[in-house]
Length: 196
Image (tube, rainbow, N blue to C red):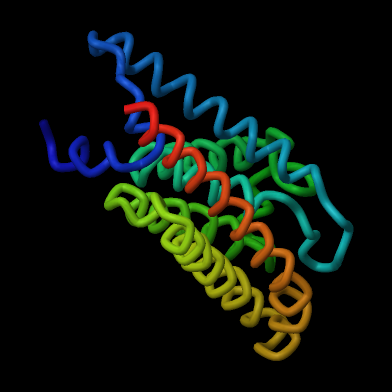
């Protein structure tokens, strides 16, 4: 058993038995990844139009998936999601295409990937099992997304405007999203613990 397998067992999906054969395990993980990318794509379309960054449910989906999957599967899922968008599939908030990675908001896309791995890493180590731990883990993910997204946007708009349009309008909603993710994850971990 590798170190990655050992730590991943602490994420929510790690509590469920993996298929015994390598081929079945590969198919199982592929279905999880595809389902995850679909969830993120759908969440991107649940939005309130704002400029330059629309308010969507992507942060919620990314945090929930990362804390459920662990770092390895979450990283693969977000990487595949970005690949889907890069080749033109309409999975981003306003469409798809390689041009999105040259846009002022590209930092948020990279931030989703970075946050998913970081949050998944914390979940792998059991930090998302309790309500306070899950909430703190989700907030770490939000900080990473804001830092990378607003930081890159600041190169185009300046720091103060970037904070005004890409951070301040979203802080309260992302705190609420983080709290909701924490409640869902902590409840799921609690339910699993009671079944043992």
